[in-house]
Length: 258
Image 1 (cartoon, rainbow, N blue to C red):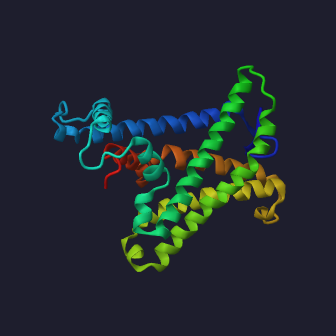
Image 2: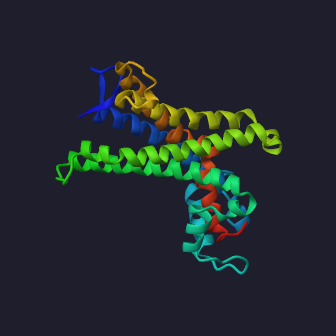
Image 3: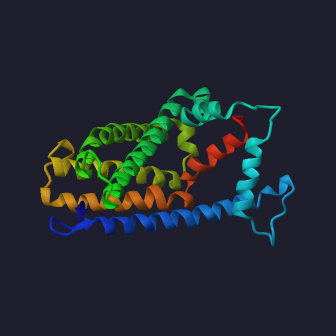
C-alpha cells in the first residue's frame, strides 16, 4: 500500500514505513509519560506513600490516583460522568472565567482530539484490511468519507489557534504572561494545521494549494505527517501540552473541584 505522502510522486511511503514512524513517535511518548508518572509518583508522600530511594513510582501514582478518584468526598463529590462531560469535555470551569478563552480552548482541544480520533479510525480500518477481515468499503473509500470531517475539525482547530494568537498580541495581561516557549508551542500547532491544508490543497487543487506544482504534494504531505507525529504525539509529555493529560487527571481526582 503506497501512501500519498513521500519524497516524490514515485517515492511514496508504504504502510510499513508510516507504521515505523508512528511506532517511534509512540515509544518516545510512552517513555516521556512514564517519566512524568514517576515524577508525579514522588509527590504522593502526602498520602503516606514514601517513594523508594527518593524516586517516584508510576504504578504507585496510578494506584493512589485511582484510590482518590474512588474515595468519597465531602467537599465536591460530583458524579464521575458529570465531571467527564461538563468539566473535561465541555470545560465549564474555563467558561466561568472567560467565555472567549473557553471558546478558544474548546476549538483547540476539540479540533486536536477529534482529528486524532479520525486518524485512529483510519488506522483501524487499514489494520482490519491488513489482517484479512473484509469490510463493506475499502480504506481508500473510508479516507474519502473522512475528508469533510477532517476539513471541518481542521478549521475548528485553526480558529482556536488564531484566537490564541490574537489574545497574546492584543490582550495586555495575556501578552505579559506569555513567554517565548508559549509562542513556540502555538507556532507548532499552527504549522501543523496549515501544512495539512496546504498538502491536501496541492493534491486536490483546492484554494489551499496556492497554485503550487502538484509534484510537490507528496513531500508536503510527508512534512505534515512527520511533524504531526513528532509534535502532537512524541513531544507532548516533554512540553506544556502535558496539561492535556495532567489536567483531566487532577479534575477527576478532585471530583470536579478547583
